[in-house]
Amino acid sequence: MSSLKYIQYHGLLLPTVAHSAESLEYAQNFSVEDTDVFAVTYPKSGTIWMQEILPLLLNGGDLTPIQTVVNWDRVPWLEEKRLAEVADKLTSPRALVTHFPYSFMPPSFHTSKAKVICVMRNPKDILVSSYYFHQMATFLEDPGTFDEFLEKFLEGRVLFGKWTDHVKSWRRAELGDRIMFITYEEMVQDLPAALRRMSDFLCCNLSDEVVLKIAEHCSFKTMKANRMSNFSLVPKDYVDSDKSTFFRKGERLHLLDWKNHFSPEQLARFTSVIFKELEGENFSLPWSLD
Ligand code: A3P
Image (tube, rainbow, N blue to C red; front, top):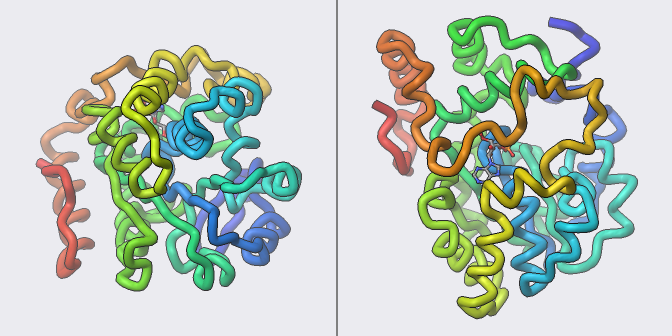
């Protein structure tokens, strides 16, 4: 592995293009406010989608943020270098995203009343999405074959470590009603219903008409065409769009794309490792892994 592409942070691999010792220290010292909202995701679970959704929900459906500010500045990552540049420009209620496991959140998060929406996605589809993302992102290590990448994923030798560790970390009784869980699949199947659930959780008090308008602006098709969200403003040196694109598939093809990639042997191995690692946990997965 190229030491230049990743740094290690408490055992997790993070790409140097967006993370540094300074950015991680900044995250630890970040002063979380009670009105802040965090979208928590393991990479490839719907992070960019939440960067579109949260400003719309929190601003009554006003399109200005999603049409005038790039996604990484409008809802910055807690752990990334960019936060220090834009933190002062964020207006309350602020929305942030993070791939951090729970234990990496800053002390001010724990003493605040900030709310969390944790988006989970079927890990088999995360693996496929991540595999293509590694092919297009020149700032990441080449994923190798699908089989090789699957092993790395299961061993946690990928960005932000093991998926199972991440999802387990956020099941915290002490968060009480500060946290809501939603799945990427739920959002694909019925976006207005998912938005209604998030809006109620955040006490946004939105009419059905506004929720439907937000759903239209957060659809796959609309986001794929939004230059402020579709990564077309990322320098070409960082993404090779001949290999893959960020918005890979259309509409419902996001669901169960893994079936086009896993062999029966890979599926059996994947399922047995994930089940073993979640053994004894007091929550069940919202999807069947078979
Ligand atoms: P695929 O690679 O399966 O297409 P993240 O933002 O966490 O990196 O997640 C990226 C995944 O979310 C990609 O999945 C991307 O297509 C999908 N995604 C982003 N916006 C979406 C939307 N509006 N509807 C459905 N999927 C979306």
